[in-house]
Length: 461
Image (cartoon, rainbow, N blue to C red; front, side, top):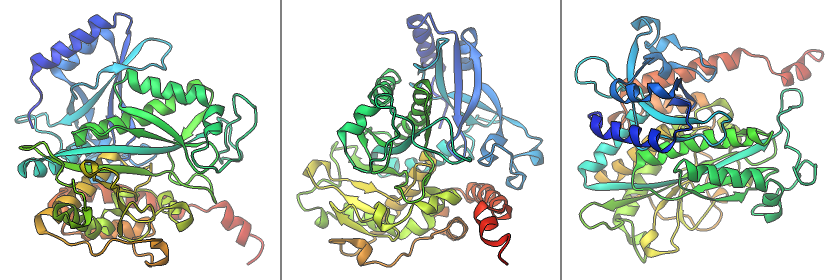
């Protein structure tokens, strides 16, 4: 993939600066392995130079653990002298940051090699996804995708390090409701939630609805489908940043942690995917009888077959696996069904033209680029190998299927590391880096001693 033509980029930058004379600073953003946004802040006058020459950032930005420390076993740190690579703007991502007191814009970046032809850097998660998307281009297919993102509003003050729901700006009370879709709960936080939707509009993020989820101060933002998998993930990364900052403006915090509260629903990241034939412009999954659509069946079959090996990308943290449980509609076995929310892969059938795959396993703590890479790898694998998924599940899948997906991070990493199928789509070198980072986090976690251990054992054994 070549860098977009410089003239087109410069035109984008010049037009934005002309239309926004108030902008003083620009945040240059890049998402790391954990989906955490990092980068630099520059003055307005430096923006054109960034479009012309890019900016330097160390390759080790993609070898950071969740605490922002370089994991040296990845080989991207001191082994290469913590060397820089060059980051270029991603077209059409320059926009305002509506929460800033000093007018500031933002711009997403992607990393490239310094030498040679400036090829994209293999360890950038966006590049991981781009290489998978290329395989669909070769089949003459365009990926159409949309995310549904769940999050909790939480108080800026915690209790002994644990979160608590924020006080309602209207009633002053902390919410207790677990009533899904309850409009009254939307009213309690209406100003914040409306500012999120308006901020998304300012930034060109196609978010069009917020619904109350099934826990106190938990909400879900729905985005429109876009015919570009990379752009859909760009939007998901930017939406998380927008939600965090808008909530902070309203004196609240947010969390996308997979399971912040014991006994309450976790935060999921569902994605809807269909495939468009470039020649006809039609959805290849479209059908009056989806169960008889061969392309849909094969795509589902591939996703189910690769799901155990994909869990490291779908659920990348220790906490991710606390989210699973039948009472919280989180599937724990590879399964599919028509209009069935108890399965891992749901096929909505409301309209024949809009038949699609809804993948329901990943947590909101997943990196959207890596999550999408794993799911698309499964779809492509299924299409090209004509993998049959078996009969769709009818009724409650939790009563029919035993838990079979990895239920902890260590097992998930082993499955990923051993997967011959995913290694055909995602560079084994990248998988090694990802596994090294996550094993480092896991080792640190397992060496810590929890409060529960002290409560159980300090005076009893």
